[in-house]
Amino acid sequence: MPTRRYLVCETDAVKSSLNFAQRVILVVALGLFLVIVGEVTLSWWQYGRVRFAGWTGYTPLTTTPIARVSLHPWVVIAYWAILITVWTAVSLTLLRSSRPTREE
Image (tube, rainbow, N blue to C red; front, top):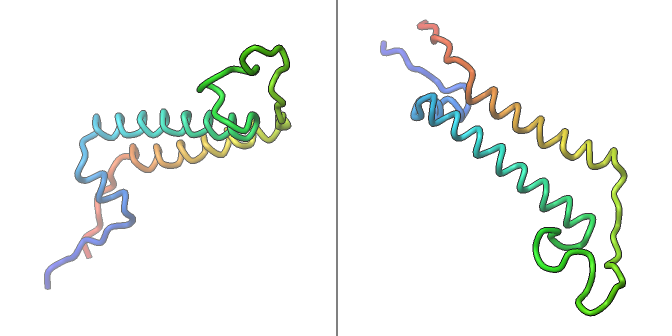
């Protein structure tokens, strides 16, 4: 009877098709993507628009600043902690060493 190897999760398929250098690049790209997502969503929550696009804090020909809704610092810290936790979990899953499978 032939032995079958079952995948533990979807990342086993990704790990088997990518070498270590490609997995490292994937982890770095995921980190950069999460930084961009974090910056955009936090600036959208605080300013109602993306902070680093367009005018910065004032309308043309006026000195009145645009109203800003400030988030509590703990909300910002918690948000970044969640993004860092997601990145760490995915990174550990992708970069952990492959364990030999037990043949039954």
